[in-house]
Image (cartoon, rainbow, N blue to C red; front, side, top):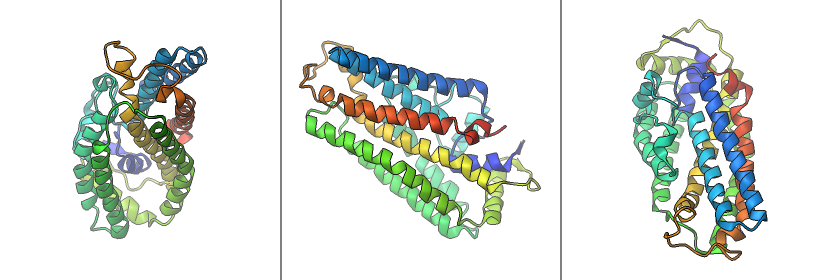
Length: 306
């Protein structure tokens, strides 16, 4: 097959499938985000009405659906496994799963997939070190290695309900700080991308793509600005996905305690840490949903692969 270089480079940098976006996937992502938004609004109504247990149940559901929308957008989840997903497995070492395979867990399955993917990504980058982009590639490799360390740190983080209001306040504050930094990260990414040797980037990407079985048309005129515009929203989606995984360490456990009365938990009253921090958690998820919608509906993502 012949791959568009714009789509090719965007695909290589974002680590997702080379298959063309299709209406069913776009609709599925929109459906997950819409349902997440609906759950969050309903949670707020129940919170205002003093229905503590039910409001936390819907808060957890809102986060779970947001997480799955982000994974679908990144190509880490799939609606139905296809040959295109086998290319992802070749590049990243794991086969994207359908959303239902994650059930009501978000963080642990993602960590498992990313632990599998990390050495594959590092090996993928090692194959590019022989180019004139060696300094930048070495920086990417170091970034992958640091990510592996962060995965280990995340695995050590307690997975369970947070017991104190103060600890949950800290988690909310960290999430808010990360969201505030995303715009700054995007600015830095634009500045970094502007320093690349465009011709060398194209040659290297084409060489790696050929080694993966793609036939690349090097006569095609490539818009570097278009490539950057395609990649930056993906960077934002990836960062939101990482933040969502972190939130899952203490939001996933709400699933059991809000559905099974026999599960041990703090009383669902005004003194419950999650109730006392509800508005903070609500604000974080609301911001994440808005940023996710902006990223997945950007013109570059809508047109990618067409």
